[in-house]
Image (cartoon, rainbow, N blue to C red; front, side, top):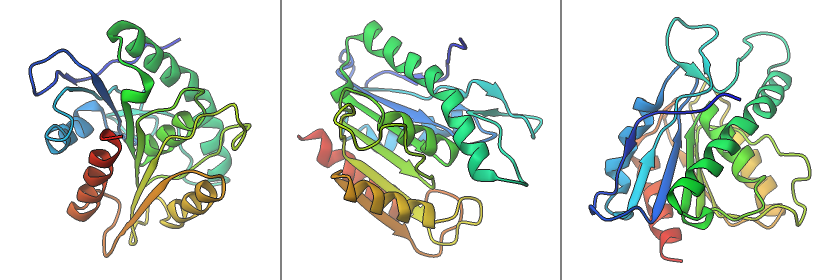
Length: 219
């Protein structure tokens, strides 16, 4: 199985890591992209290590970057996403298990965050674990429910959803649908729409996610 790796930042406090933030990039990008979120969240998580692994595959339709799974620009996009997420899931789960065993950091002290395709992975994997994460942050993503979603087999971490209402890459309705589905299943959801924003992370969306992280870190 592919072993993930990517840029890592040790805790800003200089102490041994007590928490972890795992950042999952979007299609055609790499770990150097989302590791840039670390300075925004280090003030509220000074003892957290930040790691942003590259996806398990080289990007299939671009000459650079990585992907969590291949995408289709024609045909049944939803089916391709579902197949891709299921195939990539074990690679990310193994990465998380290795991280926890090697550092001693607990799942409940771990934030799983992602953008676009990375957000799809964060939601699918983070909501299919038996142990509860500190939280999940999904920017401009979609929720592909794992088999058995809603059962007692899975823990229920708090979830933050952020999406621009002008996104033409990933339909904003996907986050709206995720908000509805998760709330109906009894999850604690924080949902924010960035007005006039396309496929990206706007300052208001980042601030909303930062407030979410500060809140769950105190629990």
